[in-house]
Amino acid sequence: MELIPDYEIDDLFKKTLENKNYNKISLNFWGKEKKYLEIEAFYIKENKEVMLIVNDYTPLNRMEENFKEFLGNASHELRTPLTSIQILIDLFSERKITLEEIYNEFFPHLRKEVERMSKLVSNLLNLSRLEAGVIELQLKDVNLNEIVFDIVERLTPHISKKNLNVTLKIPERVVITADPQHLDTIIFNIVENAVKYTPPAGSIDIGVEENVNNISLWIKDTGIGIPEKDLPRIFDRFYRVSKSRTNEDGFSTGLGLSIVKKLVERHGWEIKVESEVNKGTKFEIIIPKGKDGKRSD
Ligand SMILES: Nc1ncnc2c1ncn2[C@@H]1O[C@H](COP(=O)(O)OP(=O)(O)OP(=O)(O)O)[C@@H](O)[C@H]1O
Ligand SMILES: [Mg+2]
Image 1 (tube, helix red, strand yellow):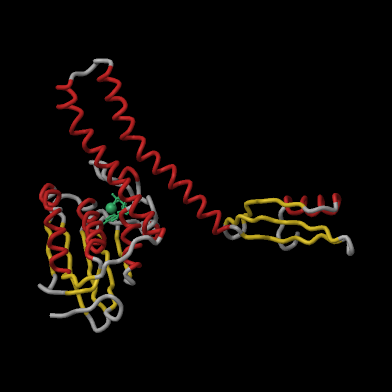
Image 2 (cartoon, rainbow, N blue to C red):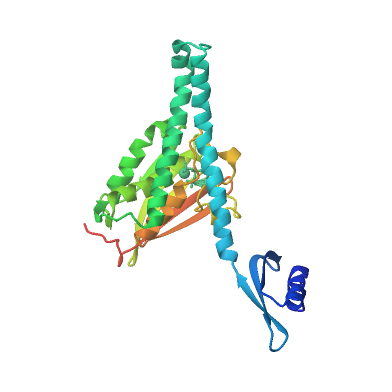
């Protein structure tokens, strides 16, 4: 009781002394931080003593909590578009709306929701493959300049719509060894975020720098920024700084950066982030030359 002042443990101790048997309890223990403990009590006949074994299952319990949150979020994300589709089917089968109305009013909306749903499912699939370790890297020599250029081109409709100023500061030829498809996923997600979280007329700079040991690719925006307390969590699955801050077109699963981080680590690289609220954010991928990154001219 001096060591762990908890009445449940005291009760367990007394109970075991009384029934001279094996007893077990689980409890949340609040010390400096919350711990999830399982405590086993054994009665030792010879000495008339009780032996307690304390198992700390805190890390396992935290994983279970994350998983529950993950399931809750995923089903919510999937249910919203499904409900819309169901309402539409009901209205149509009861002849409360015409094909014309569906075509004009519901289709644009529905297309967005279905796209959102497919994005969630393909992100989930990617993440689960990555976690299961099923994804093999197909390493090739890739020119960073070309990959970035192609991504910016694909995002041009969104960039123009928000009147963003994108500047590339990348040498014409920076060759690294990487899986081209996964490298595309990594950079696309970071640049897509920069576009999404930068208010109209802001700017995005993308650059590559090289020193003796590393090649570093950075993406810097003048967007809304990320509060310091949220920074360590943005790579968590489904984590979004604030639901209300997600973009208007609803294209946010909170999975992008968790996939990015896993892919970066799979290549043996490192990802860093710096951010200041209302000033902007800078992501940096550090590619060690000794590992997979190399440069040729
Ligand atoms: N450049 C950025 N500026 C400001 N906030 C950002 C930036 N990049 C990421 N964030 C914050 O980090 C969160 C997690 O990003 P992530 O890419 O994982 O998810 P998402 O963009 O919300 O959804 P998804 O990428 O799956 O559509 C975002 O919701 C956003 O709050
Ligand atoms: Mg994203």
